[in-house]
Image 1 (cartoon, one colour):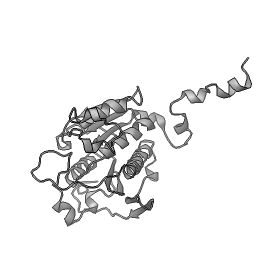
Image 2: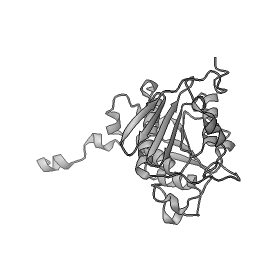
Image 3: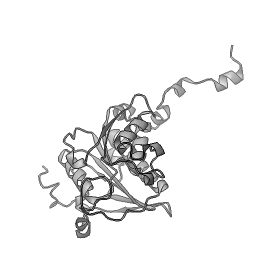
Image 4: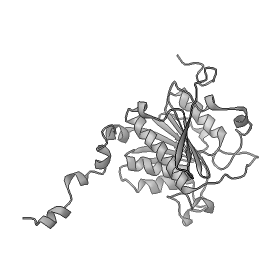
Length: 262
């Protein structure tokens, strides 16, 4: 017979379930999450944090697309990269390998490519972790065309932005203005060949982590069938004040992504 102390420290049945604590949130549907097919575009700072959160949330079928290699400046904000990874492999391959170690049942597929080269869009959700407008517009357009929910994230220093694009609702392009188009071809590090390079943007790990967590949380809502709980419009996060602001976005019926909708 176990002593009181032994009973207290023994592992309970519920503690043998990896997702027990998540299941205690009534609306989270672990079954649907585990069968959901995710595409994460970008394997840099945001991509590292998003994939980490997706795996720990129960997603088991994740594809990561990125064509770049790891450099030293990635190491202070990319949780899965190490010194030995610098110039030794692509971000997507290294991220897929390391993140897979978090859960033996997860399958993470690395795609070493520009997102413009992606042909297979058979996914249940797309998460954008990119750092330029051209790639964002490409992913946004394909997500709209294939009626796939798209969660876009971005950071600039201590500031962050999250937009959830649901089929039939306002998309990234609906909120674009002329200044966005003027820099849409600017390449930072993950969209492919270009002769024009813009200065690097500031990046800070705690803001990146906050934005990535919000993206993953929206993915959990969507796959669990709770689109009604998703962020509406665009959420801006201020890492200095810790506040989140909402900017209203209206669907633009003249947007080419919506012109053929029934």
